[in-house]
Image 1 (cartoon, rainbow, N blue to C red):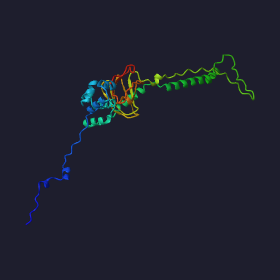
Image 2: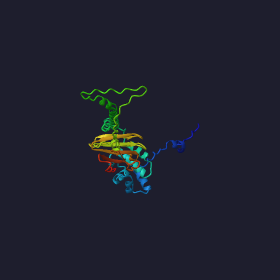
Image 3: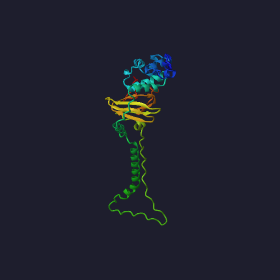
Length: 300
């Protein structure tokens, strides 16, 4: 009778391959938060919060709040994204991963809302109030030509039809000699043409005096834009793509928020506003009928 081989405790131990399969996989360590990444990059760049605020025009309390991942003081998701981009560029890091992280944590970026058709009518209405100088000049030229023609060809007939004195015989028309052309009656001197009015540049290009007119054009990139009239009614809330333009009019004022003021070309009441906005800079602006004599409001 053979005795079976007993199993030793070592035989019950799992092999090396079994142990490798049962290893606990450690979850990957998450990267720093948005505020931590911005603060670390600022310190690495040797900048203080005051210096960053002065460069970006983002107020110091908002910079402190963002570096602690508190975005409630930004005034909304749109402003928060703009501040993140501005601060990231100021401390020399790529803003897109931070903006993507913000969108992932706050439900994604909202789709832009189309502009209401009502504002196209408001944009067309001032153009019909401009004087038509071309039609006025054509009418003046036609009137002068008609007066000269009437004087040249109607003056002779008037002389021939004047009444003959009583008792005197009417004079016979002079006979035409053979081979010689008949003598032409003397023509009245031509009246010099009246000078035609020259349209002035202000009459052609100036915006209506009773309205404030703002024209925005995206040149070097796209920018989010919000526009409201003097009563706070929203005129536009969306993104301008490169080459796209929007025109807003109101009887008192236009309030603007530019998500990236550095790529927007701005005209107010027919004159270009040449403020040196930085790329990625968020600006809050207000313009009235008296602008551009008064400066735009500072971005908050």
